Image (cartoon, rainbow, N blue to C red; front, side, top):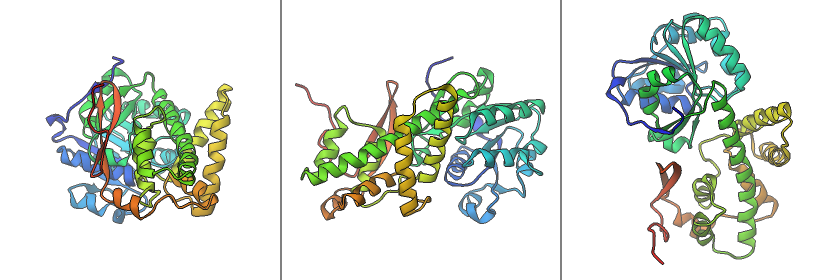
Length: 349
């Protein structure tokens, strides 16, 4: 099927044995969702067991290697890693996943990496009698922790159906994207659009501030105007309370832009705006550090203009703000909480 499915959490998760390699923000959040759904979860990260103390306390089992994760996970093994080379090492190195992957299990790739490398690893997975599914996640860490993420899936239909209950523990929508590899391309395009949004958002906010426009009024007005976006709705409130940390690192955004630009070169697609956005991100990382959040282009633009975007008024207005999300009639919608919302209800006329 090629439709977008709503998949509620299922009792069939109970007793499933699932492994996760990579216990950063993404892997830890997915592990928490699976544990709440009743799965038996085994985890591993090169950084050692201290990186996931909370998940182990919640019931996850720590493995001594990626191979041991696969050996203890007959239903599925998930990779949630930052870069293509990390996925390659986790799968193919000594004591890697491929050495322990069981026939009939499914490798689920939650990372956003080089789709050509992922295709190569898929062949090795299938040589062992296992299945492969790419399932990059989109929607932000906040909604992932709520189990309301969207996943873009590239896999055979029967592999998707088999693993649907597992995906549903983290994702309120499962979006089939066709052949294996295409889901990663769609995810790269989504992040590329976010990067351009962040740069444009910085210029718009600085201009509004210098023009004397009330920043909360501007935020609300754009939300119901044609210039709205996911980044606008979820990152502007952070900026207006003095933060540039949307739970996604600038370094990872640049990684995705780099992969996208390389794909554009391969196919002869113009990447002019993406090239400019990449330069802004690189300047921001050089100034503030690559570990900073992906909203730092806004900070760079504001600092260069000698403008403070957050003031005491806006910090108070957004001090308790947070968001959740729903997918309604095929579109992703942001729900704002703990802020004055003048356009929260539809009006006639």
